[in-house]
Image (cartoon, rainbow over all chains, first blue to last red; front, side):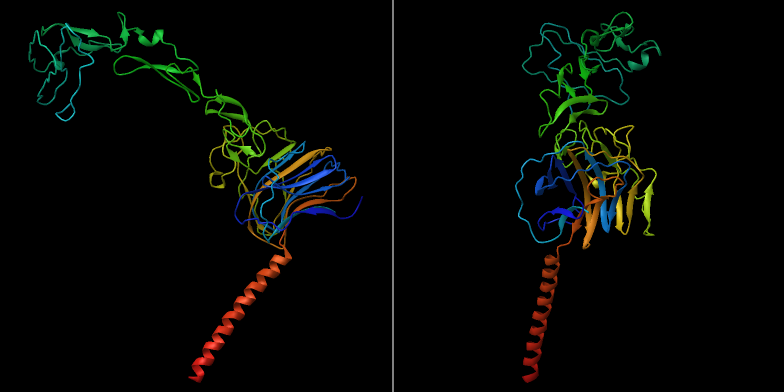
Length: 97
Length: 327
């Protein structure tokens, strides 16, 4: 499947100058997006990713601090998928292109 | 000793025993007050010997011995062991029979009683109590252990971390079998305002089973000493126009995987990319990115709100001006 495939959070309340952890996970065909410990979006896609010798780019039009990047060979789970009261504002988008 | 700080000797005085008080060193005039409370005196003898300490031959007592005096004779000096020490050469210690456990060190207090100084992570009279038991790990952490710095938990469940898994958001705790982990180790070193991309030759792109870090989240403490022998735990500061790229590397995504990124954003753009991949042999997609989008509706709402506020004050000013003009 080529082309644009994306899933995103609702307009969320990312705060400036606050440590934030964004995680996306893949378990089988289920993709999930977490904002801190909240699951904010999920989608099902049969997209398979087999990546070797790739480059990873960090921070485009990004002003702030990148603290850590971690890749796990399993799908993390987050306790409490309770959705916060989302406010209008910036949102997080994960996409395949 | 002065009149305001008396020495209470009640614990040392026993019934029907001769008790003697000796002041070995007195450089100034000494007033000795003895208060007897609820005591029946059978024998009381007070003898003042001037400058007793100077009468002790120099270097007479060695090996931790102290010069003392026997009986009430002026010349009857002898060398006595310090409290808690014994033997002809004071070679025996009360600590000999009191082994401290778990690496604790025995010492003698002022009364010669053996005490144990425990290493971090243990306590008790003999350091017998392990602070890892019961487990101090919070939030489901496990594997409490000791090292030279103290004690802590070696495995914390995502996303908790810290010595006792008490901190939220530390996904770098030990035990997490990560494929790769990128602690940014050179704070600001890679920043260049030219706007060009970077190829980070020093970027640690190899999979790292990174050990536990003490304080990985506090940005203010990022410069503090991490675990000995481990890279500094710094953050990478980006100024908007920078693009950081890793050198060619292999990241193998299986059927199941997770990708986490910890960041703090200081300015919103319409689109900010946290991370993107441009792999060369993706089977189904050509790239994938994690972006932060500034919501257009939010932008519109913000502009509308500002405009409304502006027109409100303009209208207010207009009414005020009109009223003043007519009156």
